[in-house]
Length: 370
Image (cartoon, rainbow, N blue to C red; front, side):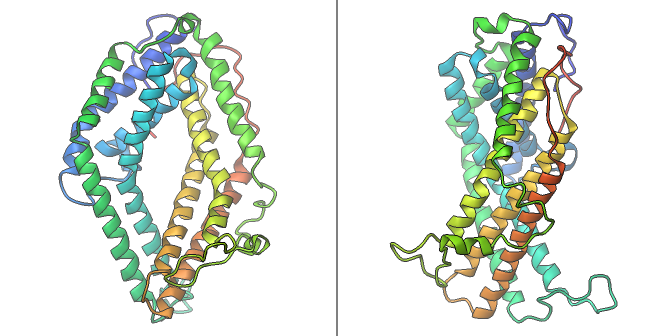
């Protein structure tokens, strides 16, 4: 957020003043981080740092954070902006967010999968903490690790090349120009002239309401047991089948296990998006909640574990790999699906009875970096 002084008392600041100040601060951060991100991308494949880089000093990580916050503000408080401008601006922000997130996501996925495989294949003695892993000494473990490492390194390299090309494109320069103009004045409508408490807080509350409705639709009762293991068994009710190694499902065949799991994950991914929007709306309106920050991290882990499981399943269907290698990848897939279930349990056990309806406008909160 911003630590600039307010130009009007907190109780009388207009929605436009507060929203403009927030967007100005985020746009300034974007413009300061952009040259660093371009330099990082031009260094070498794999140089783009994680979005969770410590301290938030990494250029690409800072760009991701500012793009998410600006996009969330424009989405939640869209009624205060010119409709055509808001729609086009959000589309460009989505493009940049998708572009920037790919390489760090592959890096985190690689670290997650390789660490899981190393733990599963650990050969510690029974006297050591944890003992040997269930894949200790398995002949397929080294080949499975090499396969995952090779495939994810290739994916990261391709993503890196795309980022390097687009960060010097006319499209990005046009978006940077938009950010420069945003620092000056956002195209706000007359409705933004109302006081912040009367205009911003109800719209922020609607973002929280949308989140609460989506959470109510989740199977939280089913996720109420830690590390519950019935997730894969539920697929039997759909008639889901895993295609044979190296083949696609036959036309007209029952829904694949991948599609069934994707459908099972989709509502949770939707809640993750809505939770981020609620967080950012709270930042703008001065009604932040630390619980939302914690839940956001939980759903980030859910997303990453689900994506890692898909990667392991895809690798297991690589043509001409040995059955032993495919078996190891299947175990890694199951391990990541248990991580998915663990994240769901953590979310359900922490989900609060949110009520961010304010008693009054408090002004912008302290600066945030996460």
